[in-house]
Image (cartoon, rainbow over all chains, first blue to last red; front, top):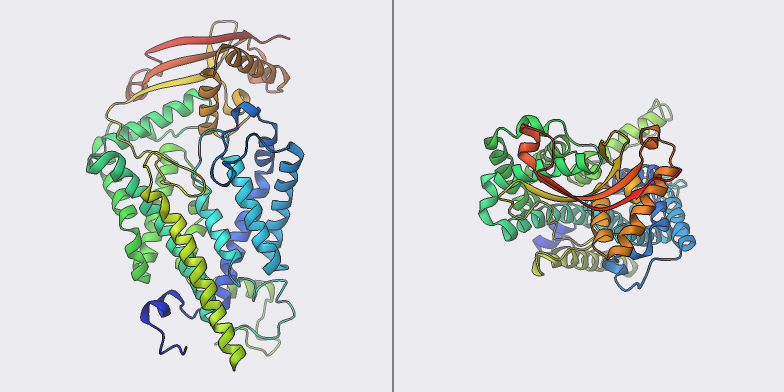
Length: 311
Length: 159
């Protein structure tokens, strides 16, 4: 099928993009994985020592009768960390990336199987799974170290980026939908949000955890919470629309990032993946970062007489 | 030429299949019960329910000091889990799972304090698991105190 003959929706979902854009997303998500997973290794490993009665398996582990053998689980955590390094470097990518994604899936599900479900890692995991299914190591990777030229723009690099954007907007849309289903339009009055901010901070204080000192300053102003409620619901329910316009998508990304910074400031809840902006990177031309990265590696790109950009 | 066409089709099939499967999975929670949640497929229900009043009933683990002061124990010390939301659920589950389980949980916390090296908790003489009722707006506007508190378990920190 020639490109011209393909239906519009197919060309839209499979845009021709530079291989470096997808590879750069692999590097960003991979770097996040190595640092975040590595720094939190003691946390992930700690689930091997929890009391068996506290185990409440969810998702793909729902079938388990009890916790995994501690040694098996801890080995899995360490292999996941090693996998994250291979994923970042793009080393044996076609074989290792799917295995890393599967191991990360299990470890994160296991970590969420002890009572409260956290929602901070969902999007990160989905992005890893998508990247693992895509040719994200064709350039800027150890697998491509012997390649003499850059792969030209191709639609095989486009769908995964489109899908990463799509699952991102879907996550926010679902959050907005949950507010409508559970609270109705009354959510926009802001009272619930104000009460939640107060409640969340009190329970953090009373559970000996860091809280937001800013919350106490905002609580006397209910109108502020009405604004926050309207703005957050509009951004969440309107999220899928930004798929239609690149500029709108960029503005929405910045708005959502601001929303998460606000949540951090008011509730001391850190959604690290969006706050680092990596969650929104698929909406941007990340290949420009690759250019910066390369200039850092080779201080003078013109010295060897070979153009580095595909154009 | 035929290899090229074959490769194009392969990428189209993989891209389409992965996109459809992931889209279906990610959106599937929207068609289920709003209260059901899982990982990584979620309805993202956090802070979505109406909350018309600022009340909070919280089951918490407290360290008791010789002068009678009570201070909330951090999640890691109370449950072994550093995530506050998971720790909160663990405390609730452990104290609503029967008397013996609650006592055993209380002793575990006392043991963790005893084994811990933090000087802040060295002076604690007992652990209390309490159910406290707060007005969370008044908490910030007037006084950071519970409206009421009921002790569910108490156990000494033995040294």
